[in-house]
Image (tube, rainbow over all chains, first blue to last red; front, side, top):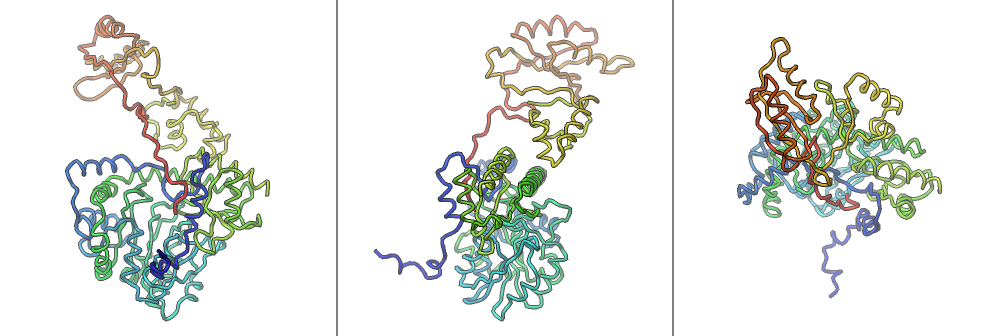
Length: 388
Length: 170
């Protein structure tokens, strides 16, 4: 059967993932040190795993409310109030989802009419552009630059706005650049969103993983922004719970209600075992999270120092667990550089182009891997660039 | 490896924390991890060794994997505190025996908790009956022989199987 005309046009039009291409190259090779992962190298802290086991032992194996267990939503609103300085009503303004990825999909499908434009900053997480397309929206990337430490420049945002602009997607700290935005910088963005009546989809999944003195600031906490922001967060990164697949969205009730309409038919609810684990994470998991954060901090500093010492220009990223060094001076595309590095030295780092065209000339290196491996990877990278 | 440190010292110093996790880190490795100079790391460790904060370094060994295992016992000891010296004099008198590998003053139903090692049950039993119980001021003791270790000084003895992450993920 010819399936080519059986696949929906907007799905067929989605290009193959650059991450997927690179994965296929790395898969099956032994002795590769991978800086290509996008998840913590810690197992989930034991007390959280134990809470999941206890939940199973008690026979908690049913569906939950579509929005998620009320106890979890209450824990979430308390945590969000403390950490993000925004208050939400646990019964109407929070929805628990299967990872932030689902929440992004729900929000876009709930907000967009066909042809509506969604502005997002590039380089960015791989799912943004396809998620917009699958919701019949039109993605409008705005490039961020090394000179701005990959923060979103207000003037560039304003240039991208048209009468069809409906949503702005933000992700600070950013995967893949580790970029963060200060309160002052975000205030400029917030003003533009109010002026042009944009809804902001703020993916703050890395917000606990900040390493310098500035605290994380959510755009939802800025004047006039709570009413127009869908704050997205989850458990994967800060609590090392990627496999639990649990995220959430906080927003005014009408927006959550619209997202819930899709979630209830597509997903029904997030897995109850993961929800039980997440309650433990929020109630008792903070000390374990702090230890992991400290370890990432040490590794970030080491990696940035080694890269710069060997002559690879790398800005100091304020958050997440990625560095995004500039390899443009070696005269190779990101993909060529990454493939040659893999071939010659068995080190895998993801080409920047996997995160948008603006990522060419950069590599994403994840430092959520053991110190010994990071050290070896840097030694090999240093040897490699001497051959170029 | 574990490091033995005296009580009441800050457990939060990141250098000390790393040494307690793995005393065999080289000074260069520690310097890399903490973004310090190698000389600074060496100097700080030397200072701790000099002032008795760091008392020594030794390996954490799974005795099940060693041919000559010996036996160990946890012994609860009730003692009469001495006038003037409180529990310290009694505790040090007991702690100085080679057979006693650890000695702690505790709250609760007894006063001292000892870890005692010997080559066999008989040797430990003889130590209790001939040495420990005969010390004037020792009121009573209860000996619990060690059967199996699950965790010691932060090290799990049954290591978790390493779960392989996918090599490249978004």
